[in-house]
Length: 167
Image 1 (tube, one colour):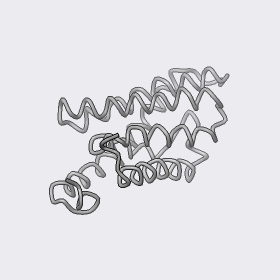
Image 2: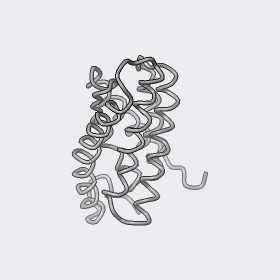
Image 3: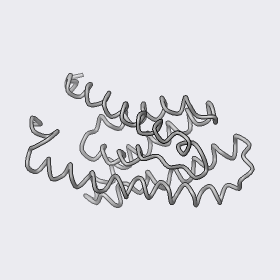
Image 4: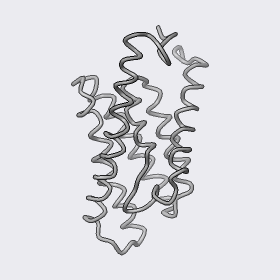
């Protein structure tokens, strides 16, 4: 645990807490076929901070404890966030494109959230939920996440804000 620091632990807690808080604020829309989770805008963070992969996973698992879809949402939803966050980090490292890097966040959620809804006995069809989740994820991930990414990138280049004391 050579790279473990108090700073990383605090940042991890803040990211997980922000994910939970932003999801719970929009609770009526956070767990449905027309899902709107502004917290998904935070999914750009693995580009800058590898530890945020786990933070987003923990935040997702914690917030899914409030889901009416139960254990399916906790396990499948959490694992979807974990895999998508890992892919975001890896794709960005390979391509340096935020648009490509964030696509797993949209696609994997569009595939697996409707599956959770379907397996939970929902009457809506899988494809309808796929399209709905795809669109709502794209709005949150790209509409919120991309502007935040550019703000963070600017701060990182200038070594200001959250990057002020970064090595």
